Length: 473
Image (cartoon, rainbow, N blue to C red):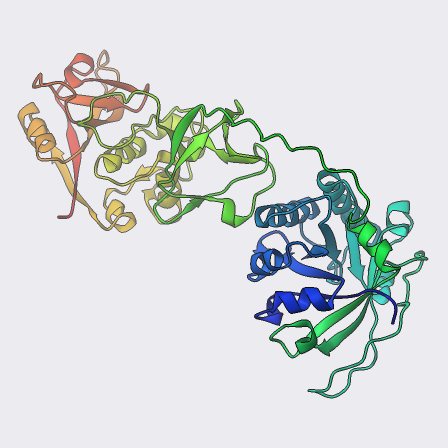
C-alpha cells in the first residue's frame, strides 16, 4: 500500500522497542484514558518513548458519563505527560454504547468534547469508531461531525490464532452522512514483532493521503519558527493551608469552584500542607492551576492561634457559616444544637485527632452516635477513634477537680448554664483548653460564639458535670 503506515498501542502491547516502532511507522496513537477517572498505566512511558515522532493520544469514551469531564481528563492526562499542541493530536474512541441515550444526545455529547478539546488545543479531535456503530448510535447532521477527521475500523475476517490477519484494503466503510476519512484501522491482528512490541498482535492503521500531507497534519514541514515562550509569572501565594480530612482520606479537587471533579491523582492527601493562591468568597480555595478545593476541609496556617503553643489542634465553633445550617444527626442543625458535638470535636483535636464538626457529625449520624435524633451517645467516641478513651461523667465537680483533670492532659466537655439570669438550666456545653497563661484559672473555648475565655469570667455557677477524654498510652 502507498498509504502511510501507523499503529495504535496501549498497555496490552507490553514492553516496546521505541526505536524500532519509530523506524517502521509514520505515526502512532497511544491510549491515554478511559472515561474521566482512568489512565492507561503504560501511557506516560509510551507517550514519552514516542517523543519526536508523529503521535496522538486517545481517550476511550463512555457516552453515558459527563462529556466535559472526560474531555478535561484526556487533556490533563496528556498535558501532565508533556505535550506540544502544535504537533501532538488527540482522538476520541467512540465504540461504547450510550446506554439508552438518543442518537441526538450521543452526538451532542461528542460535540461537547470536540469543542472543549478545540478550545484548549486549537483544533478538533479525531473521531475513532466504525461505520456500523456510528449509524446505530449517532445522528450525523452537524457540519462538525460531517466534516470531522474520521478514523474508522474495518478488518478482514480473522484467521485462527496464532495466525496474523492481513490488512484490509482502504477505504473503510463510511457512516451515513460522512463522505471522507482520515485513518483506516486496517487490522487488529497485525504482527506485533514488526512494530517492536512484546504482544503477539497489534492494531495497524493507514493514513488517507501522502506522507507530506500526513506530516502537514502533524504540523511538520515548512513553518515559521515558533515565537519564544515567555515563562509564566510565578503565582503569588496568599497563604499555606493544611488538609484536615480524616487520616487516610483525600480531599477532592475541582477545575473551578464547585465545578467538575479533577482526576483522583490530583486530590489532596490528608495532613498535606498546600499553597493557596486564590479564594472564591464562596468557600473554595485555589491550590494550583485550575485546581480548587473546599476550604471546609482545610485549615489556614497563617492566622494566629487563639491561644499559645500549649494548645494542640484546631478550635471550632458550631455557628461557623460553613456548617451552621447542616443537619445535626437527624434533628435540628449544628448551628442551633451542636454545642456538645463541637466541644467534643475540639477536645479530640487536643488529643491529636485531626477532625472537624462536619466529619464528627457525619460519622455519628451514620453509626448510631446519636439517640433521639441529636443527643450524643458519649461512649461512641471510642468506636470512631479506638485510641481515645471516654472516661465517663463526673457530677458536680469542684474547680480543683476540673483543674486537676486538665493538668493530667484530659480535655473536658463541661455542662454550663447558658443563661444564668433565670432559675431554669439553659443547657450548654463548652470545652476546656490548657491555660494560655500561668494564672491558675480554668480556660475554656465556647463553641457558641468562638470565644476563648476564663471559665469564671463567663460562667459563675458551679459546673453540673463534665465528660473527660484521654488517649491510650
